[in-house]
Image 1 (cartoon, one colour):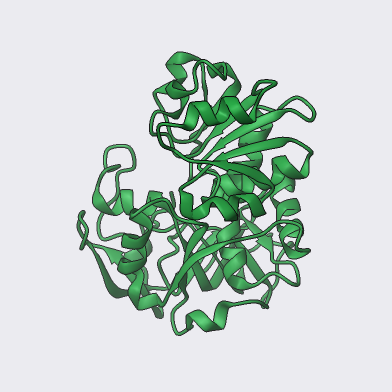
Image 2 (image 1 turned 120 degrees about the vertical axis):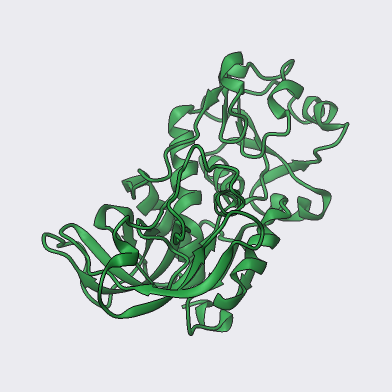
Amino acid sequence: MTRIDPDFLSMKGDTMHAHLLTRYGPDGLEPGSVPERAPAPGEVAIRLDAIAVNPLDWKISHGWLAQMIPLALPAVIGSEGAGTVLSVGADVTDFAVGDRVAGFFDSGAFAEIAVTRATRLVRIPAGLSISQAAALPTAAETATRILGLLQPEAASTVVVNGAAGAVGSMVTQLLARDGHTVIGTAGAENHDYVRSLGASPIGYGPNLVSDLRRLAVAGIDAGYDTTGHGFIDRVADLVDARRIVTIADFAAGAGGAIVAGGDPTRLSITRAVRDVFDLAASGEIHVEIAATYPFEALNEALGFSEQGHLRGKVIVAGHDRKPADIGLA
C-alpha cells in the first residue's frame, strides 16, 4: 500500500487534483486538491496518465485494514499506475524528464501527480499502451514472486485458482509459456479467455474436484491460489498443501501452504518484472483491461472492482485524460 507522506498535506507549493480518503466507508473518497511535492534524492515525480485499481484500495477505503495499515486522514491512497516523468531527485540516473514509466507509488496514485522511489519504476517499452503498462506492475511482481517461491517440476501439470484475474492470468501465461500443462479455475463466462491464455478452464462449483481428476490423470504437481474461497481445502486430496502458494488464504500457512502476502509498501521492480513488460510489449503475453473509467469516476471504478470475478484490471484515466487517450501506443 502506498499512503500519503506525513508532511504532504502541509507542504507549500502548487496544488494538484487528487481523491482524498476523508473517512472510512463506501463514500469516504472525495475529490479535492493537495500541494505538489518535489522529489527528494532517489525519487521521481510522475504525471499520472493511467491509474490501476486494486482490491487493496477498496479494502483500505472501507477501513477493513485500518489496524494493519493505519492512516492519518485525509490521505491519498492508491499504489499503481503509469505516466510521464516530470522531475527527478538527486542521484536518480535511470530516468529523465519525459520518460514514460510505470510502477508503484509512495505518495498515493489517486492523484494528478505522484512521487515515488526510482527503484519502484520501470520504463515503458515501445508498443505497450499506457493503460496496459498501468495494469502490469502488481500482476507481474506478484506472479514472478510466487513462481519463484514454488517452481513446478518441468512439463508438469499445475492448477491456478482464479486464472482470469490480473494476477492469475499472468501466472497462467508464464506457466504455459514455460511448457507446463495448466488448469485454471474461472467463471463460465471467462472459460474461452482462460483457453486463450493457454490453460484448460474449469468452474469453481461442485464439479471442481472431479474436473481436476479428469484433466490431471497423472496428478497435479503444484497450485497457485489467487482468490481463496476454501480452494486449498477443497483440493487437499489432489495437491499437497506444501505444493500450493496462496496470496488470498492467509490462514492456510497453518496447514503447510506457502502464504505470499508481501508488503505492498516494499514492492520494487525486479529484473523478472522488466522481463514481463518486454514480453507484453512484444505480444508474447496478453494484458487484459476489465474496464476503464475517467478520473472523476474513481469511486465507480472501486465499486466495479469490488464486485470481483473480473477479467483483468480496472484502469482509471489520469486527470484531464480520457479513457480513449490511454489505449494502444
